[in-house]
Image 1 (spheres, one colour):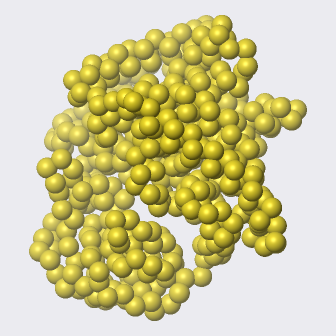
Image 2 (tube, one colour):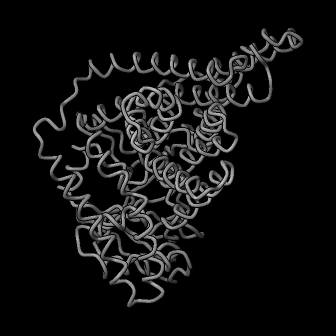
Image 3 (tube, one colour):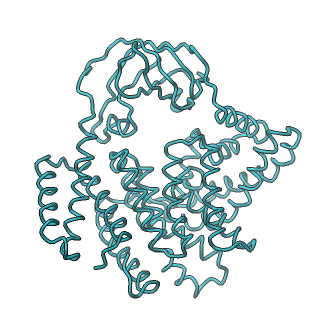
Length: 483
């Protein structure tokens, strides 16, 4: 077993993340964590010259640190104020309000001596509240503990992002409007989209380019039935697909491999900047960017290493993402599936498809679903069996849509009369996408219910297949080295 900094970075990150994941699902007593730490240190002190003997001790130590981090986060759940309380406080709006289920939802952070409220507050207020990120507001109303349901712990779902309280329709007074250049820019871009592209295509454009969340319920149903939600929502799979195609364009332009990957990562950063650095978008960019940053060296194992480090870093700051954030789970598992299975699938498809673009899209679509299947099946109770077909039809259009969409929101905002001309190709592509999704969603048995027993059977098979593919990739690229 090789023992190097590369080995420690990869397996140390994996062990820490595994420790966090285990501890957020199972409460591990402190004495167990400290006992393992003491045993690991003692073992290291005795056998520190024998690298093969020291390696397990280091991995156990990192896993124990993961246990402790999850325990520390769990201890941060407040135990006071268990009853509803009438409060008044000053707060800062952390994110622009967005509409859902007949309310505007906005997260505020209590500040100043008037508040003395630990944690953030999720406020449900009347629609069209027009609250902006950075606004200073006075809030007066009933402060409540988020409820927990039999099949969903809503309180812990909010707690993972530091939200400890909810308020329904409180009195809100804007004391000082926020002054954020990027928020004003996003509002201008959104206005350009809404004026240039009619609904429902404008909803899709705003979701893809700005990270907006509003989509009609029937559209969400069709997206889930066809396995194309990732095309519109900002996810790790979305960022990975986007980065792959941008990188392919750079390579086609004659740029070297390193320059192409560096340019791709820059475009991903600019894309996330455009979405307003939403937490879900940032996590997705880290996951997708980590995979493609590893590609700058031309070695797939570097992609796995950076993916492991990025996951461990996110769990260090927010351990409960591993249990209560399906977006984090899907982003990580999709990119992991691409890193592990894509090389194998591309070799398989070489015998069937001559076009490298088709092999890439088909391989990424299938590879990303190997590990995400259990999460999708458990979260939604169904799985799309025809997702490959609409993805093959729609995904190749995304780079073209990105070019015209970017031109629309940039040039169209700066010079308004250009928006009408630039909107035509973007509108045509969006209309075709929605038409294709609607057609495939009407196919009988496009989405089928998945029994929980089948999911439990698929999980170990997926893990075994992943290990086999990973080891094969490793042998082919590095016959004499391990990760």
